[in-house]
Length: 294
Image (cartoon, rainbow, N blue to C red; front, top):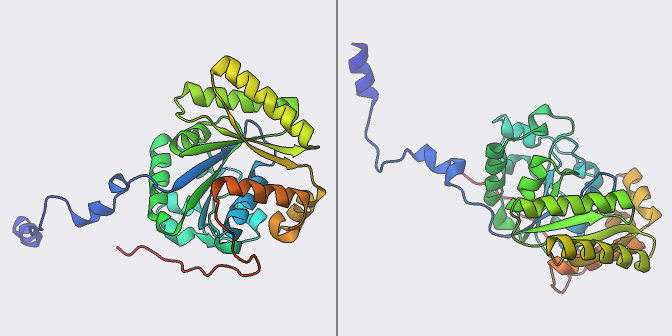
């Protein structure tokens, strides 16, 4: 009797693949819009601060930016942007929320995919879960011109994986020798793992143009000699006390101190990514959040 009841509940459906499987991550493609992984060989070089403010500078110029906090275990982009996410990537990995549901709206239309600080689920993601998350970004790219990915510091597996997955890599360093050395170590490892394009380079917290140029020249010289790589230097950001003040205020630098030297330099960097006539910065772009319906 039970067998006949089960057979009665079975029915044929059109096609050979269940409808639910069409929304499986394996059917998604990787993002097609321009994606830039922002990395550093060591912590403390201002990578996340640069990522957050570069995203806003791009938004100020009219670009639709998707900013991904991929510093999975020590996330802080929400603090730097002054937003308060209710959910984050840990809820996505636990199956409680979708990527569309955790996205937070920031200034200038920037959309943030937040992560959690100190979450054991995010601390050591394997390549399968990294691939699922990366392909999930393609579900958000219809409203994005640029995807910026703020990776963790160092040479963790998730960092090098995301650098190879993104279309471009931006390596941030400071003039100090430990930062210089670790930045070169990261570039060397990425090349060994098969990175197809030479990374871009930004010198942060430089005391002046001369120091920034000297640091960039030294890194380029070593990379050219030992790795046969011709690094593209995007520019530099000067040391600026306004950066620390903005962090304490929990407000982005480019909005808290828009005329500070660091803000001006970051806006110049944004032109490397989005060479479009900027709109009136006093008018925030309208945003129309969308969700994919099953």
